[in-house]
Every structure is written in structure tokens, then in C-alpha cells.
Picture (cartoon, rainbow, N blue to C red):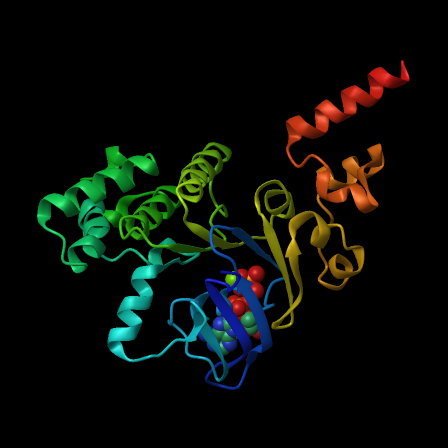
Length: 281
Ligand SMILES: Nc1ncnc2c1ncn2[C@@H]1O[C@H](COP(=O)(O)OP(=O)(O)OP(=O)(O)O)[C@@H](O)[C@H]1O
Ligand SMILES: [Mg+2]
């Protein structure tokens, strides 16, 4: 049972026109984990995510689902996309129906569910993203953050096993980020595997089980969050700053071999700080 749920092996992708976006990329997505993908602009994060549900077909290399190379025929793609839901960074690229409830019900109806079952899925998904009050609104007349939440609800309504999100928190207000992470946390606790790209190292540190750092179309390092984000050489190469909470934990003596047991939440780091201050007084 150690086989990754989804694996990317030697993936190369060249865009029409000749831009080489992925250069022999390897990545493992473990069942039930939260994997954060970090890396500078243009390092291939979006291109990789588009491969995870078959929207892009590799130039070379392969994607494996449950250890088996995936196919690209219509039936296989349909089956694959039921299991892996992809949420694009730009909600306007994802929303297409006239109203919010029509948009979110499209997936469940397409799965062959009855109107009543699809209606229940829509209600549940809209509530999870706290946008139930927008159900009857035209999709084009929503704010960016509202569109983003509706786009996520549309994928959630399909109940995918793996949820892939391209910069899910970008453009959301702090309240929106908290709600979104709460909804994703619930899915995670119910067994959904989460893969998300982000420029926010603090979010990756606080929230991910594993991190993969991208640079120029390849993975510099993938592994346990604290170990990867504590690797100064990898961060320097990919032009990332270490998370502040990790730097504070290190300064308080949780570096080196203790990195994995360092607190990763604001509350945890503040409690450690208070403990040390009390010890010094
Ligand atoms: N449609 C496209 N046609 C040609 N080249 C593209 C296309 N989309 C992306 N690229 C190129 O592929 C490379 C990887 O781009 P990608 O969008 O995957 O990066 P990214 O890591 O998601 O960046 P960002 O952090 O800016 O979102 C870049 O060199 C980019 O210019
Ligand atoms: Mg991108």
C-alpha cells in the first residue's frame, strides 16, 4: 500500500511554439496527504497541474494513477476526471453556466445523478464554501473571490478523491482564506487528497504535510514540509524565503534534528516563545 495514488514520472512538456515548460519532472502524490507545490513564476506549477487530470498530454514521460499509466481515450479521461478534480487559478476559465446553481449542478448531472441528488450535492457544496446565498445569481456578476468559491464548489460537487488547486488562496480576503482552508480541511479529514500550488510559504509551512519545490520545470526537492522548507540551499535556488514561523522556531532552539517537531502554527510558536521568556525571567 506504499504506492502513490498519483505519480508523475520523467514528465516533459513542450508547449506548441516550442517553450519547454517541464523537463523530466518527478512527483509522488500520497493518498490522504496535503501536498503544497512551491516555486517561482514560470517554474511549471500550472503546467504540471494541467497534466494531473489529463488536460495536457505529456510530450514525454507518464502519469500513473494507482500505479498504472493513464490513457488518453475519452472513456479513460472521463473516469480519471471523476477521481481528480482540478480547480484553475482563474475562475473565469472554469465557470461557464448562466447561474451559480446551474454551474455547480453541471458536474453532478453529468455523472448521471437525479435532479434531487444533484440538487443535494449543489446545496452541500455551496454551503461548504459559504456561498449558498449566491445560488440564483448570474455567474458573470460576482466578485473575483465569490467566483473563485463558486468554481471550487463546482468541483467539490463531483466529490473527487483528489482535489488539485492552482493558487487557491490568491485574490481572496483573509476571511475568505480562513473559510476556504476550513472547507478544505474538512475534506482532508474525510479522506480527500489535496494538491495545491501557492506562492505563500507561510501557508505551505502551516498547513501542508509535504512540499515539492519547483525550479525551471523540475522538482528540486519533495518531502516532509519542515525538512524541505528548512533546506536553505533548496530555498535559495528557487528564490523562496523561509517561513517566518520556522525561522522563529529555529531561533528558539528547534532547528536541526528538532525541525520536524517544531510548532507550525502561530499559536504554537507564540506558546514556545512565552515558555522560553518565562524560563529566562
Ligand atoms: N499557453 C502557453 N503557451 C506557451 N508557453 C506557455 C504557456 N503557458 C505557460 N507557458 C510557459 O511555460 C512555462 C511554465 O509556465 P507555468 O504557467 O506552468 O508556470 P507557473 O509555475 O505556474 O508560474 P506562475 O507562478 O506565474 O503561475 C513558462 O516558461 C511559461 O512562459
Ligand atoms: Mg501558475
